[in-house]
Length: 328
Image (tube, rainbow, N blue to C red; front, top):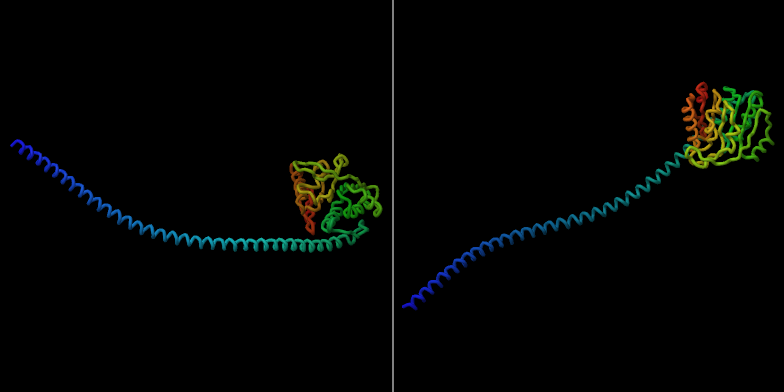
């Protein structure tokens, strides 16, 4: 009887354990079923995402293909732009040449006009006996000769300083020969050119030629500017009412040129004065021309400025009482 009860009890325990296991199994099955559903949902989501990914990949491929085509188009456009730029550059070069040619033609026309004006102006001159001049090129142009002649006639200067021996000397020397109270000083670097002038032209004691060789010096931060050696000492203490600047040689100067007068202003100027500065169409000469004006401003000297255009440009700076010189 005792054994039977023990067996019965043991069986009951086993049954309870089996029931517990069945309950656990049911719970696991339920969880597995729920997870299966979740997995199925995930599969569906993955399938949907795969479709979207495939769609996006196709779109990316289309975009990539489009970009390739666009890049090809851009490259072709760049080639065309480069060709257009070359054409524009060539057109601009041609326009620059045309402008240069137009300026040259305009200069020649202006020079021819000044030649007529100059020759008509000097036709009946009392003091200008030799009216043959070789103007232009390295010499002064007709516009410069006209200004010099008019200044000599209208202003009648007495103390003349001329930088550079040449056609202007031929003109001014006849004036100083005619009017005995005029003193004419010429500064020239080339002794052979001075000898040539002496051999071919006659002038009186009122004219002197100062031979000053070229040298180079620095000035106001600019280096190696060509000047007349000893110029400052030779004109020290002198005053001039008419100054003609056509030297030293300045066509090869990059910064400033012909600064000899600039260094001696205002002490070398008479109260009433005229400065004629040739070749101010060149940048270096124009810079000096402007520097002279600034020096006069800084010294409180009233003045007026003008220019005469031919193949070259001649600038004039005059004391305030001689403003008419700007527009003769």
